[in-house]
Every structure is written in structure tokens, then in C-alpha cells.
Amino acid sequence: MARILVTSALPYANGRLHFGHLAGAYLPADIYTRFKKLQGEDVIHICGTDEHGAPITFAAKKEGVSPKQLVDKYYRIICDSFERFGVRFDNFSRTSLPLHHRVSREFFLNLYQKGYIFDKETDQYYCKTDKLFLPDRYIEGTCPYCGYEAARGDQCEECGRWLEPAMLLNPHCTLCGGTPVKRKTKHWYFDLPKFEHKLVEWLQSKEDWKPNVREFALGWIREGLIPRPITRDLDWGVTVPLDEAKGKVLYVWFDAPIGYVSSTM
Image (cartoon, rainbow, N blue to C red; front, side, top):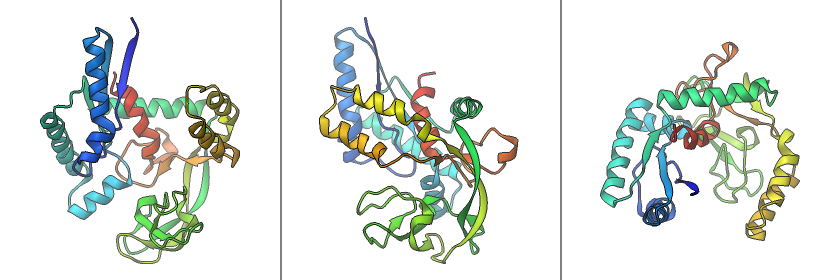
């Protein structure tokens, strides 16, 4: 008998669920899990709240509470919503749990010791008014590709292009509206180009994927992979397990996917 693991997207613990969440991610998975259990299959359905990153700290500042208070509040609300909707999980975890923090640090150290993570000093926007380096969600500006004037520091919602804060034109701090300045800071980068060949092989092997989906993913690689920063200057999140990285936490898009692993432990 095959062992089946069903996962659903981890909802951010910074707001309430809506029917779009339910229809898009959770109801289909719940139906599939129930169907497989009725067939006598060995299947579990896991999920959990995504509780780190700039969206959490930003929402906490808006509500005038700490990030911990915010995620505790919305974890309870989200759990209650799933219970009232009738969506069942075999385990519904949280990325703020000590277990998840330990597993995320183990992932980081494993990659670091194998030479897939390196540190680099870069210029990053700093807000003199709020006295902090601005993570991607704390900065907005004009998209260099399409000219959209409210592009975020990580992505343009208008054209969908991936961005870095330094790429924005006319940047401003989303907390105070002021113009940030550039200052030196050190971050740790995942050396994604080292995986280019393996990623191409893996994508090309997916003959059951729709051709346009496979080609879309391959197109990203053809444009050229670059190292991605996987640490942030925040005081909320999974701390980087290196002595020289005090005051740094893991980027949420590094630690959040590990939540699917830690939720099964």
C-alpha cells in the first residue's frame, strides 16, 4: 500500500481566511484525503500557519501588537475557521514552534557546510526615521519593467516580475513614507546557479506536466539563475545559526517550505 502525504498551502497568520482560500487550497485537498481514506489508503493531510517574515511584522506594527501576539491571535482564528468549515487535518502545525526552528536551522547548516550558502556584503535601503533596514515588504517604488508606481520590494503585482528592493525606482518606506538611504549590511545567499543542471534535468523529466507549465519553469532557468539572499535584518523569525550572523533571521521563503517537513515530525 502506498503512503500518501497531502499538503495544503500554509496560510499566513496575519489575517482571516476567506472563501478563495477555502476553494483554492483546502477544500480540494480535504475531499481528496477523505476519498483516499474511504479507499483504505494510508494517507495524512498536513498543514500549518506560516508565522514569520515581513508580512507578519508589518501587520503587527499596523495593529500595535508584537509579532507573537499577532500570530497567536490569527492561529486561533484560522483553526476555528477550519473547524467551522469542516476541513480536517491530521496535523495542523505552526512555523513558530521550537521544532520547526530546529529543523530549519538544520537545513541551513547542512547547505552551508556543503558550500551552497555564502555570505556577501551588500547595499541595502535603511530608514533613518524608523531606524531599521527595510525588508522587501517595507519598501515600495516604481517597477523598472512596467512603470507600476506601487511595486513592492519583492515583486511587482502589476506585471508579476520578481524584484529586489535595490531595483525599485523612487523607493519609499511603507512605514513612514520617507526616502531611505543605502547602507552596508551582510547577508547569506543560497547559491542557486549550482543547481541549474539538476533543475533542468528534473523539469525535463516531468512528462506528466502540461507542456506550457514545464516550459514556463524552464524559461526562468534560461534567463539565468542568480544567488538569492536567504537572510533578513528582522527581530522575528528563525535565527541564523552562525555566530557572525547575530541579528539576522532566515528569509521566510527559506523557512516556510520546511514547514511541510516539520509538520510531519
